[in-house]
Length: 197
Image (cartoon, rainbow, N blue to C red; front, side, top):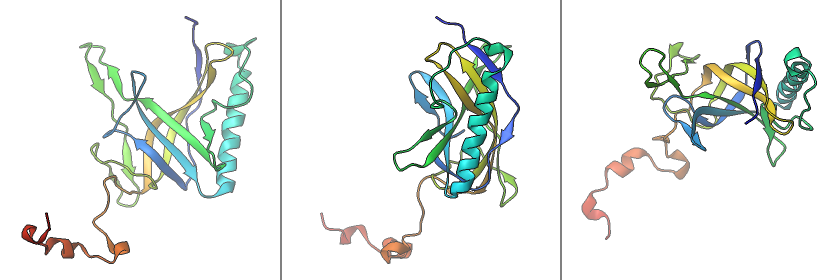
């Protein structure tokens, strides 16, 4: 197996206005190919912000390729592993991740890591059991890390450090059914005997 060369870069914070997609942090874990990670994708409605952040990713990746650690390395064509993907509709989705578990050096036991999260509206920490839903607005403090294993396996990851949620939408739905013209009390008034079998 090829040796992985990696370089951790200076931490940064994603721009305001990012909307969460498929957020699995603390209360939910992304499990894929035996790896357990926290992941969240961020999209921006504002195309100018999207373009600026994409450029930041491209420029950061391009600069990192010039570091002495990567001297004489051949890279994949394009920036298709540069911390973002282009979706079918042309939207750029920025992918943040980090490992969900670590091994305790003293006990050798596997321990779940928790990402610090704050609700900026209430100015309180978000408990670990809160599930963040699509559409929540957030900013992510992250550490970019560039890696090279082979000329076909290389890129840049955006590792989650902390999360500031500017607009929290909790996963699990809402008790508001007004779009159907129904108030929740209407359901409470129905007796089980009135429901046809």
